[in-house]
Image (cartoon, rainbow, N blue to C red; front, side, top):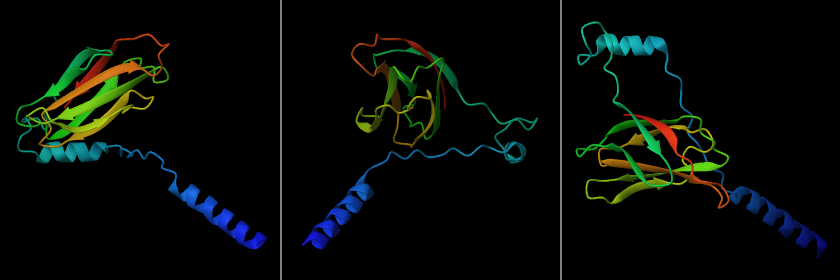
Length: 152
């Protein structure tokens, strides 16, 4: 009987360890300078001097209220980069909502930048609006407004 109990206890422990969910973050690969030069030289849309056109870049002051940081009625359909100045990820978290042209939520994530304050998001053609908020992680932490740089 002890062997049966020991076997089931071991099997249960293995099942519990295997079922623990761990958040997975995709690693961004660094872009090789040679690749950028090759793309810019072969691009028909670039200027004559071989430089790729820059992404649109904006700066916002974001706090606990939802702030729209990107909008395109035809769909963003590309990468969206967020960089928050002097972000304290221990005390505050960034939440994000992506919506379609009718205002329906396409995707949402709480604590989307973890503690870094920087992240790249892939927005499909159905994403027309992106809004974020930066709110305290705990009730005893005061609201804080951060400068957010957005490029897309």
